Length: 335
Image (cartoon, rainbow, N blue to C red; front, side, top):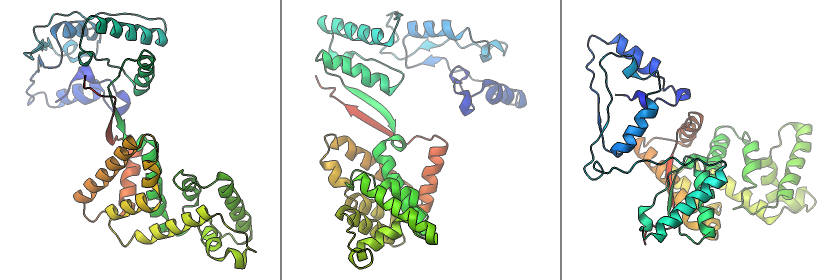
């Protein structure tokens, strides 16, 4: 099954010539062609206008296969009889477009249109965020749903980096220094960046001597023996705490389930406490829940899944740009 009119993502392999024309040529003798012409999403005027545009595409199969027709018919009973014609309005700039959109909504509201019956469709999330600011300036409430990918959200990416670090250190000790340097900066640890910089410089200078010292090693040693071996060069308490947490989590990797490990990371690293103090805690908790649900689903699918396999799966999803869907809701649709 395929739709040549939706083959717009060539960079992902959606190519009419490769995917459909060649397939038809190869199996022409045994192929049964069935054209779906009933459309349940749009009104007939929208289908007609869309056809006038798509007809200009010379690569369409209707232009290559004799007798093929794609005359779509609006078939959803509740909308098939609507005759409202689409209106095209052009603006010189994006700002003018947003102002025009907001004014149109104001006009509809003044005419008594129920707010929940007014919808705005936009291409990118960033456009919707900016448009929402225009509505806020006029005290017009906005209800929106944003379809995001967990793998692209800062909070989730930080937790994933912790998982990658733990997997790296469990596999080869002291192999994750670059990751450790970054995760020590995460806000839930509350460590001053200058203290991490000092530690990093000390590791660098020690490395010139024996090529063995790592941030994890030095951090652990200074946490335990700061006054005996380092002339009371006291390590800040938050760095000490981070060292204890990290060592505990590395030790957890082979001894507990992935779900339990995730729970320990959230609790012991202070992530949950940090989130509960943030102004957008409900959204941050939703991110945590989404990530935890993903891990639960994968471990349910493969009960023997270990941390390294989970990290490999996440890295593959990142490489192939595979989304981990999450819907962000703001405002209320209740009027």
